[in-house]
Length: 448
Image 1 (tube, rainbow, N blue to C red):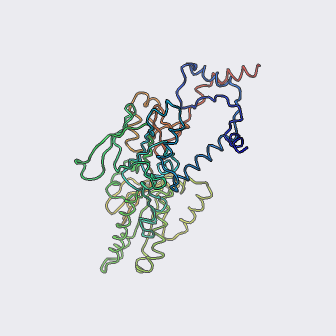
Image 2 (spheres, rainbow, N blue to C red):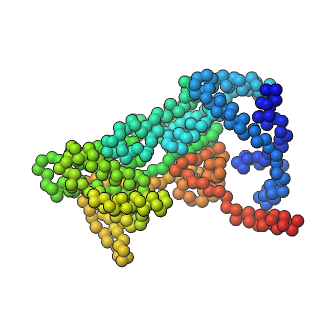
């Protein structure tokens, strides 16, 4: 009786018909060659019955195996041996080998992918300049010392362990080039001097590009040399050091009040989530710990938020935008400069061009003690180079500023390569390309 219930849950008692291949699988030799014939054939197929229990049983089996791996009740070697023993004689003769999945990056997308990866079937190899994952929403708190740096970092190697058994590898380095035709990536170590950096090649069965994004300075002169970013943990540490250097300098006896005002003027470029949080953390610091340790400096602190758009937090809904804008405008220590653009950054000043309500453009230079740049991101160079590797990729990517992927997150124009996170954008095929075929099929069906 128990066996019958198990077969029922597995879907064995429901007649199964062969389902169509996945949209990312290669077409069979007998499939129609033209796009028109393929679309017509799919439209002509009748609905196919399936077992409603089969997905549930598959999900339960996967979760149970993952639980045993995490708790040490099962090892990857035992799972591999069991899979070989239950396979056909021909499959048992072949040596068991997990397929190698190379993951580029250690950010949000990469960590989410590794957390759900079945490491009994796939061998992950992670390549990243950092051996830890950064919880980026906490970086503004690290900038002012509210939280230590260790509070927002987790080691990547911990994610490659199942049940106390290492199931993958991590290499600290940068991917300099992706070669999709050779199924290899060329890597470079980030340790030591640039001329002494070690290089190696890593082959793969599948490649997952989760390289994130780089800071976009939009070509504004002086940003790279004089501004501070809030993209990585190292950026937060540098910003914290510079912030307290400015505060300590302003607190030294003999510094004029005018010089103190200049040093304690903090400019934040970008009114997105990062920029607003950094401005709020700096203000909160001077209202809390700063008020205790530097009470004489508190009345001189001023924060200017520069934003090109006419609102703040543009990615959020109108209610959130209005609420955040009202709080910033009501704060006497914060100056909100909307529809303003930074055109130059110096060691101790910033040039801002503002569009006034009457349509006139005004440009002024503001002295400041610290400038934080939180105004946009761009795709990493390795991703842009990948999009131009072959003629097929150049045609599929359409000179996009980010990697274009399909519904399965496969890189368009490339086999075995996937992209996740900020470095890519979902680009479903436009139905207008098949408009004629769809119209003919709909007309024929309506006439029938």
